[in-house]
Image (cartoon, rainbow, N blue to C red; front, top):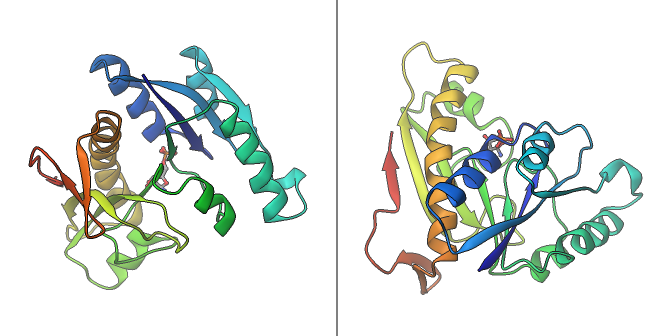
Length: 209
Ligand code: GRF
């Protein structure tokens, strides 16, 4: 049984999708804990209601990023995770923290990386007239919103789209690809070839929504 720790900052809809898929598809894994940097994160309620251990490490209670990350790592490591899943976790992580979880920490970012790292991805895509948008699940490296790509989902940007409509269209696909990526990892279905993540069974690492 692989042990998964999920980090959230807010709503936690991606965490919810992963928790539900883990149970429904009987993964060889369990969600050991959900950790938030915000005490008011909505997702904590869902996790607790599903019998999952929760913890809060409030970044506002720490004077430096290093101190926060050290406390966060303690909270995570108390559950001895095989995989750490960042699901709408809105903190920039220190290089030491990233190194500690190298090869066992993934993130979902709401753009087709390497396009649009950082914030306001949908607004920027609309402003630039992009016709395609999407989301990416990737391993976390020291560079923000970078690292080997596990799976991507692509959706059209439609005429008249606003940030809210595009982000909703992308979010539907996030809820498909994030559980898929976690399932592949906990069932050892992925290989790294020259730094590129490949599904051993040839499953498509692209979803077109
Ligand atoms: C998602 O769009 C994710 O890609 C981004 O923040 C949002 C989190 O949503 N990083 P939720 O908390 O999973 O509902």
